[in-house]
Image (tube, rainbow, N blue to C red; front, side):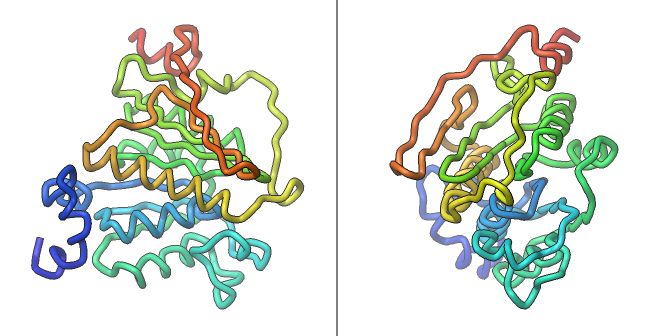
Length: 252
């Protein structure tokens, strides 16, 4: 780290639990971010601001005017631009010293098989169950920690699924891939803009703790946010030994 880095990241370095060692781990880390929308926007900006050395952004969508109410990485001037490029532009303006790779594509199985093994932490900021299950399966297969969030209307939830820990559940333990869930989209149901900001910020919070090796994470707990009451609740969650995803890999 040079003098400019010491100055830029001084408020992290001043933290006793973080220090120079924690910042060096952050600077050496590679984060894979799936989704550059409502959740992905604050995640991208906070990871960039914190100095995560390499960040890969995956999203196939373009910026639409209806996004701007909540997707704070984008701007009116960038309507029509691919979201990954728009977010990268905002991230580079915040911190030009980091390496950002953009992938304008859906997070399908072959792409995840390529990208997940390269990452130190994966953040799922997608908006549909199919993608979430694909990301989870790849993280379990390659033993990568996953920080997964979701938000709709006034509600949100967040957890960390860490396949490196033998007792950690995976996303499929809580939401089985063969179960029937009603897919709810903000384009139909609406979403209160600070809710995605709250959950996305907490995703960045958990990811940076994982990278820096500080504090306890949400592994084994599901954090739920009620935006109407401004209240957080936490549920203990356990690994399902019969899970078709993590159960299979842990028996090998």
